[in-house]
Length: 139
Length: 119
Image (cartoon, rainbow over all chains, first blue to last red; front, top):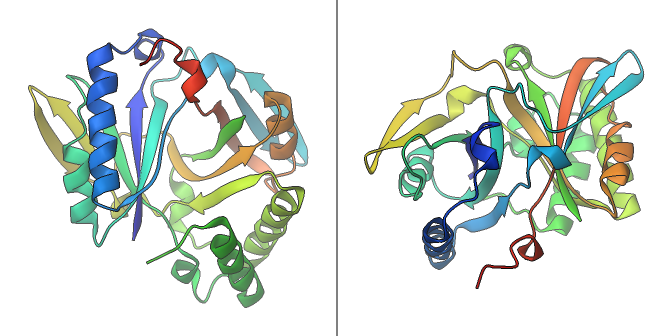
């Protein structure tokens, strides 16, 4: 199973530069995921001022540039890991070297088979073929 | 440059299964991204009841299983695109087959060159 671990922050905390010790601790944590053979992705997101929000209404899109100063929650980065269970994903999340006030959300990544009976077979085949090519292997 | 494009939703979308026509339309959209060579990855996230939240205090982690009743906005799925600019990322997202007030958030993925002081 794949899980995405999403690091939460907010408009205030995203302005703070993380101390060097945190970079080092995160580097060690990422290495532990690599050593365990479970790491599929580990990425940080740049400040929300470099981002945008796009809204879709009846065939029209509207774009609002960042920063998202009024947002209650922002996303600072994420991991994607491949493990045998939600419990295992949560155990890995517990070890993230986040300080006081840090929070993450652990979410299960869907696989085409989760949509059996709903997704048209041609789309399922297309999605699975695409995942093979992109290198995202489900377990 | 890589961009994370996240589908943000209030969670109600998990209450009904997706319609086949919507999934077909999304499948076609994903194929256009792949054909253009800009798609790094695309995935959906299952409902929060399959997940958990972890908070950190005093060196200890506290786990709370989903669903998350306090949450107004959830990530329902995402793409990672490799493109030349933020404008190009935005242009691609304009073609997502959404019509009913959905929104996506586009964020640039940090690269090592963003941290020149890091040794």
